[in-house]
Image (tube, rainbow, N blue to C red; front, side, top):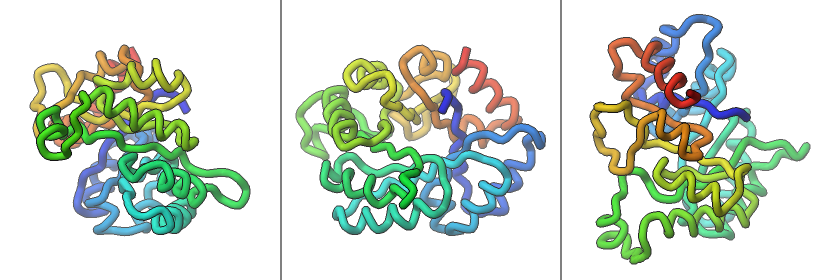
Length: 233
C-alpha cells in the first residue's frame, strides 16, 4: 500500500458522514478512518456503506482486553472487509499475537494490523506522572513498536515525531501511521505531539491521519488536496 492521507471521519451519524463525503467528486475516494464515535453510533452498516462507495477504511477501535476476547473480536472485524484495524500495544505480546490469529481469515488474508503506542494527546508529563512510565517518550514508543514487530504486526500508530526512529529500528517496511497532523499555523486542539503534513512526509510517515483540519475546513475537499500535496511533495 502506498503512502496516503487518511481522513478521520469523526462525525456522530452516518447521515453527516455521507453528506461530508458527497462533497468529493465521484472519482475521488479518500482513504477514511472510522473511529469509536461513528462505529458505536451506526455499527457495521456504516462500514458496508463506505466499502460500497469504494473507500479504503481504517477501523480505529483500539482494542485492549484479555487475549481471548481480543482474538474473538478481531475474528468478527475480519469479516467487515476493512483495510486496517488497530489495538493498544499496552495490551502486551500475548494479546497482540492473539489479535493477529483472530484477524487472519481461513484463506490466510487479513487487514493490516497496527498497534497504538502512545496517544498523541499524551505528553511527557502525563507519561511520567500519570502513567508512571519513567523512560522518555521516544524510548517508550520504540519499545512498544519493537514488541509489535516481534509479534508479526504490520506497524504502529505513533506521533510523527517518533516515525523516523521507528523506521530506523524496526525497518522501512514496518508501517508508521501518524495522527497529530496540523497545517502550519493551525490550531493544535487537544494534540500535544504534532507536525505539518510536509514535515511528516519527510520524517518516515507512511500514512498521516487528518481530522479536524480537513473536516472542519471551509472547503474540506481543498483542505484534503492540500494535505495530499504537502505530504506527498
